Length: 318
Ligand code: TXA
Ligand code: MG
View 1: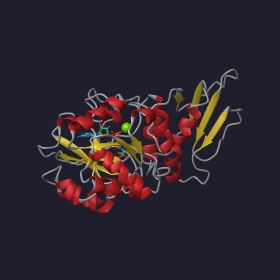
View 2: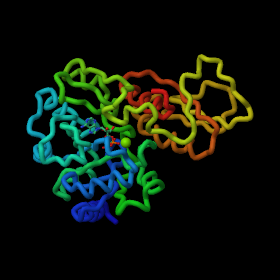
View 3: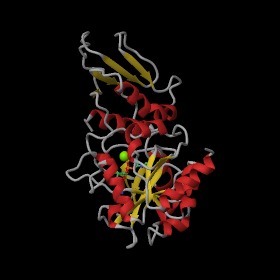
View 4: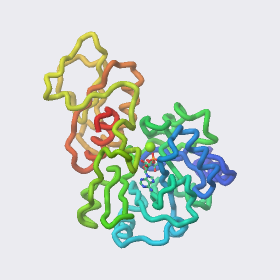
């Protein structure tokens, strides 16, 4: 099926109140009409997602944004002008009509305009904003290919729109503009430094809270089945030869131990390439029934911040 036909079919399905998986530049999303609470409820069911975890609404135009919020603070306008369409989500006070199930009863709504052409055409053809949590069971790694979605949710969703591997590979950066100062809720595809160069310093929400604002903030999230260990490098890690150990490194392995399998995120040492490969590499390691995955720590600058955030959560030690 041609891309345009597939988008057309997916839009039809959404209009019927059913759900489809769709590609974005960050990760694959699970889409439903944001203004159809029954369709949205089905997303929570399929993902086995707790109802206290609000969804991101995807838009394709200013008109769509106006359906969701009354006011856009000037800092939010500035970042939207710079980074939309793209991997940036903004949290703003919501309009009353935005269904409670979308926002988990919060007075705010998270919105983003993705830049994947198929995502944009899907939203336009459907004619309404689309909720889009990552298309994975709650707590597991986000899918970066249509195959990942098929493997985990294939029999539960009505349609998977295949847009190839995701170019960015980690989820969007989430900034809240609902308080007095902009606040980073989740590091992601737009580096914090780039946002700060436009609106000045952004507060960083503490990693772990009693009541996390975003479950992406839960200490164990984005997690494979195999335990992942970080920060082992300078602790004289005891390489037990009876164990099947996998290695996840940024550029090249620096250890002589005979690992069962090694995943290199970017041979040329490029953070963008590393982010794009991250989830698929962890999935490949996770499929090998290893006893342990050792992961290398990388500098927390630029996209390194989002990569380390996901690695920490995958290892459960955020
Ligand atoms: O890149 C992305 O953002 C992907 C693609 C598909 O667009 N979507 C995504 O959605 O990562 P999800 O549902 O997996 O993560 C959304 C995060 C959750 O941690 C949720 O708690 C937070 O956004 N969130 C949604 N609405 C919020 C709100 N009103 N206030 C604070 N956090 C919110
Ligand atoms: Mg998710």
